Image (cartoon, rainbow, N blue to C red; front, top):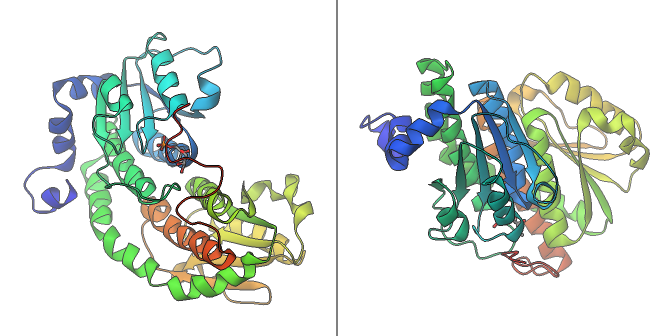
Length: 346
Ligand code: F1P
């Protein structure tokens, strides 16, 4: 879609509407509120989307895990769109949540899904297919980045109807087009990340920090480490450290931080100082403009610079690589982690 847009054939949001058909246009026109439901990695994609939808489209957006939503009494706001996100399209909790939502009076349902013909695609009014190809491993990786890209396109389609100016839309599309090149640069950090993984393989605990839309990325990074290397990993919005988790910090606790240059960086930097003062070993993914420097107990991994909105899509790549290298060092099965199934259908 982005390529066609670059070639100037058609604006990408119009393409999105064409792909959806008339029904989509009506639904997007009416949408005044959004409820996103998903599980695991897909839930983290939904958390990022909330930041985007609320800041760019000004539409209130709630996000909840399907395993909780499906069992509680809840209400739909008027003119609200129910969105599910799922790699497999068969996750039992997400499907149950969609079926429940049908009785609650949402205007329509939309799924962001990777598998054509799956239950979620068949039972939703609208679908955005992520077309990421089959995922071999249990832990979602490319599905996540594709979900985020699809959700960004959806945000643009919604934003247009809520006053987003053409210039913003054009800039986002330019940024999306640059992404593959930026991702290549992030992947080029592989050797450094492999070296960094040695600091994790012998440890039992780890912490991941981020702020704003990078908090869900910290969550997703910690989930990947748990899933494939079986190391206890917690993620916190860095401003919460002082409300409890700081007590955990010592030299045996490696701490990963995603610190691109954005509005929240100064606050994040002071959180990092709190950690360093307590002997925590920090690994900070940051770009040149972040101006974070190597120091005692602090290693910087230099990421390419990108616009604020693209940061979540770019910064998950090194965290996925980190989990991979830690798992390889520990000798765990990267593709088939113990106790997990690719598709949780019960
Ligand atoms: C959700 C999920 C995945 C996770 C694992 C178990 O699946 O939690 O995020 O990596 O595969 O299921 P889905 O609804 O996105 O298919």
